[in-house]
Length: 246
Image (tube, rainbow, N blue to C red; front, top):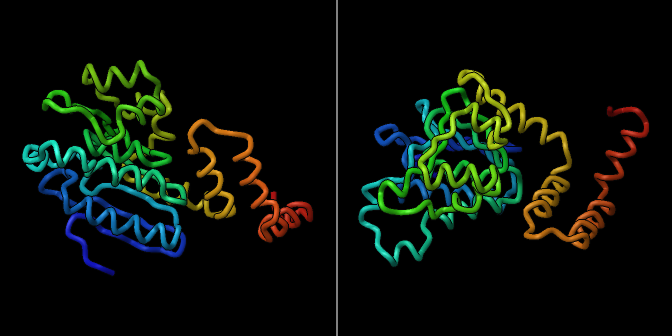
């Protein structure tokens, strides 16, 4: 496995666990981390598995690297350096889970928004303070957060600087569960374990159809047609009908 400077990667048969590790910068997302996360995405596109993202040291990611942002200009903005990565994570073939402890701010929040499901510790805090730095949250927050929590709350976060506590995030549906910090990864793995009991192909197609813009009955029908012809569908349904599975 290629050594990484900003993340720790644990590769298992059915999942990959990525821990953001920049303790000197509260896991702020810099260019090196972006490159390393692209490498992870490339591996998951080639060999689809579940992804668990978390942060070390009681912090998920306290934003993007401000020194690097200060040096970026128009050309870098048009490259979509952060947004291209987060879009790639959102489009990964298998489900993704973010286990958020502590701050998930700015780019860190946008990274969490790009995942399919989020779990949080009681200390988790989500926010997008970019306008205070003279920029906007341009890596997905302006539309992903709206889709996740609604336009009114999204504008409170994006325009008025509201930070969402773990309780807020749970009440608004941004996170699936609030879990004590010591149990956060255990519960995240339990969630992934539950997913692995489902058909991997069914999970892939369900995610693909759910994320398809606009939705369309034909898309549902085509995906279902593929699954109806799979051997796994027959094996699983035979087991159900014979009483082997509840």
